[in-house]
Length: 95
Length: 487
Image (cartoon, rainbow over all chains, first blue to last red):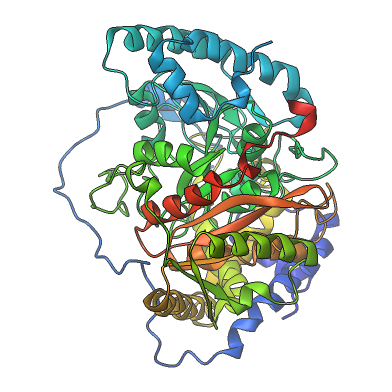
């Protein structure tokens, strides 16, 4: 599997990662090598094998939909890069 | 100069309870050791000296008045992947360089409740992605046995700190070998429990179906004490298992005559360093002398574990790390032009190269049209890998082999070649894919560097793993050896 510069740019865009132009060829080489490693999976026929969803085959635990957490907005927003009046600030979205 | 650092966690606990030492004395001694030695090792990202001394004073009161548990007053360190309220929790990343956790991970609060003292937070590969500790934003950790070599990773700071006796014990996490491989390379004892045994709440997620926290210490006896505190059902973790937790210290002395040890031929293939092979062989001989029976077994699909892992782990990491958006917490780029620019530059500047590689591999594997070929295929193979273990445990009680194909490698040696780095986890990854528990125990030296024996058990068989490791450690002293420059 070989990825070229355009593939890397497309994947980086999907992943919301800015990649410097100079680093694109390096990522293309590394990711292609990783996908080559992954290709070894195809050496085994898995027709009819059930995909593993949990090591212990347990069902997802459910709980009542009730409020368990108290409001800690101010505490949590101390880690935010930009807030105002309890709201998170981002660049203008609508011109 | 005190010699507390030569004692194990278990011995320190006894001394504290006997009133022979105080927690304040002990904590102060370890903080001094960190000050003295960590400039070289770089095993801590954050040291919380004042807070530790306050906790120690509190612990001394409890120790004097009764009601103290085995870990009351004992200093430990947490891998910087565990959220600690009021203390920086960086996960080894620039992304979280300024993150002060607003809450404690369940593992952290469990230790707090027992009165254990937190010395600080240990260095690690960025977001636990790495096998050498070189991907940390805070710089590489050095291996105390040879500071020109890596300590392994991702829990390399915890492993190096325990090996150099800068802390009696530390927490670690293991997604593909991140407790066992550094434990092996640093000559300490580390245990990755059964998936779901230790709560993942507040443990910053890398690959949620593989991540598991566990103890790292000098000996199996110490790990048993730590695991008894760490393990247990937690309703805050949706994959936590509702099972009763034994006192892991109780079965340590059980006889191991007649123990059936499986040796998978795939773990002794040509990829294994010859010197490591010899050391592992002598450890197996010792087990035979202790009355165990060695049985040849096969784990035929284990050769696929690295390829499967490099689909499952990146896929889950790309989903987990999408939460870092530069809006709610974490790094934000300067002067974003618009929302897209804010996301892409915050993430592009905040994450290091290895993290970006894995996010991109995962994004690709999960993108439209590729799901069946990658993620679904990998999850099918994961079933086959886990069936290998199930079959093996019908024949044997435990499985043994090397934890790492080679001893500690040189700093920088594999840093530019992701594939060769990934192959350092070739013997540990299958354990995570299957969800079974595994340990690494120091069993000697190759080229003056520690070698770890991996012991793999059936689901929830941690008591037996610890028992099997403890019996070996009672008849050997590899786990008591301290690197010369740090004694």
